[in-house]
Length: 345
Image (cartoon, rainbow, N blue to C red; front, top):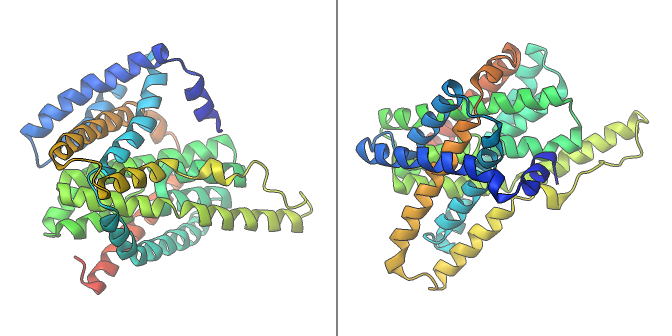
């Protein structure tokens, strides 16, 4: 268990309550505003309101545990709830259909991180973290490879801040660009699912575009997130080989653990989808479940906004930001080009 997880696990519910209630209250406002301005949508409004509150009112330390808990676990619960509205055949078909685009964008992300990182003079570990964060699943992927490559703490903070910055930009920019390009719901869902870094931002952008786009983007992103397992293994083997060559270690990868990096909420998402497929979820309650899932998404994204320290992001330095920008643009463009070739747009 990493330090953040241990901290969250040790936090008692009363300690989480202030931050959780703050996220819920702002989330309710975002939900109402989202209904008033459907083109923007509740998820985007939630994350923007969270950022505004965090960087103007600066909620105190007593809110931190609840905000962190809400941003991580409530988001996972919302995705599991979405599974109750999707059949397994739909999940399998979408996952397989998107795999070719995902593999291309992943390859582009790692190549761009390596080439642009060398040109900018960014060292290897930061290249890897920004590359894996952009290619797979944002901060979760960075957290997964951190015990493998063992970077300095400030490098981890740089990488996470850089990835988070472009997550925010994507949530605001992608739906607008999608409408300007007259993308179909499935085309936008595939683009968002393969080109936006973090699961929360994919969900926000997808459902801001349409329900169909959000459903499709969520499945694509969850398929993409499972690829952290083979990628982490490859990195672990590469690090072990290099350490052995340099006689720094015997080939051990330290605290690397498959159980620690596996995104378990994806398994529960599949269980929920299986329940829906087997007929255990009556059709009459599915709209209510989707409404609840949507509200949970808004609350979770509000909490993520509440954790966004813009001043800290600005202090990370220009080179990591330029590297993150270059890799992000390369992934977004490559996803569109592949879709154009296969006629998915």
